[in-house]
Image (cartoon, rainbow, N blue to C red; front, side, top):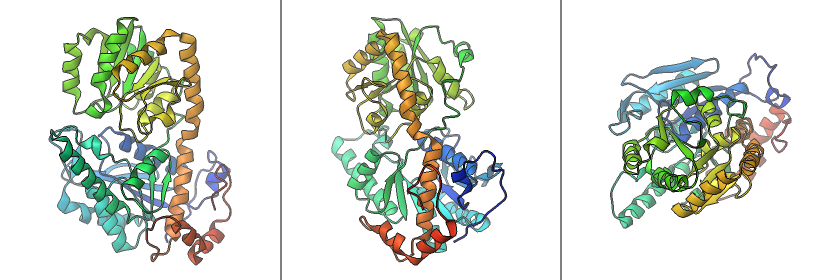
Length: 450
């Protein structure tokens, strides 16, 4: 176990943060910048939160060339790019070169000597990290962002074949993740999903979290209206990947029907493989004057874009949490969302927005009209979004994750993943008792910690 202490500027850290032993954490992910997706933002947010707590964080992900190199090194955060090739469909998606993945990961591990590895998926890099961790006797935890349904939209196939592929994909996932010390998912619903497909080890729901200092109603985005030529009307906003599972075709159709009764404007921010098709649908519906498609929005502009809008829409029926929805809530926006998977955990119907039946265009039209009928109710719903989102502060998520790292670190090697009761065995182990003596009591918000 490779714990270490170091000198820190402790002025901005809470007593809880100052009381912990600092770790070297290696994130391994098959998706990272410049790709824009929920998992990418999740790794970025969590890594920055852990650095704020005083930990050293390393990220190993696909690079942007055939040559591996360090892409970022700021303070206690360092990003390694594995040798990769550009994907033919997604220009911003880079795929690691299979023959080099294990070799390059091992070099990184030898240099940084991490205490723990945190994988974000079970693909090329995730699988290689698990094999390497076994070889080096390192504990591995994993977070699941995977929904195979999200990967099959671009492949035309009969329904029964798609069902079989989904079953196989989940089986492969469960095989890999059942070998980890601990698994997290962003919501309890996401936990229930992976339990149903065969995951049997330690699983805990930990929100992806949101940086409440970055996404806030205090942001001002007026200049973006000029930049993107957004008219001075009531704005309905979508932010995210432009992919089929986001159901943006239905959003545009419903918006145009709602627009027959009130003067609104729709802003769609993001990019993806469905962008060309969506543009064609907008033109076909004669919606071009009433819909602004911004494309990718720079990180510096994104928090301010939410403040241009009056409400946010998420029609996807495959969200394990939805970071974009949380960003909108933290910015003080009311939400219109599909009543599907984990979205109802964020959006309370008639409280901070409206839920509509997934894929029900008529209900979506009604929700848009209700949202913009009463200004007083719309503003009150935005205030409720701010209240609800406080539970998802990324610093709270980071503290919960540190607890899991430490439990994984003291788990004896002979304790294997098993259905339930595993951590109770770990807590009775001599190694766990020894670590408790080392660390002393935790202080602060999470009183259930050591």
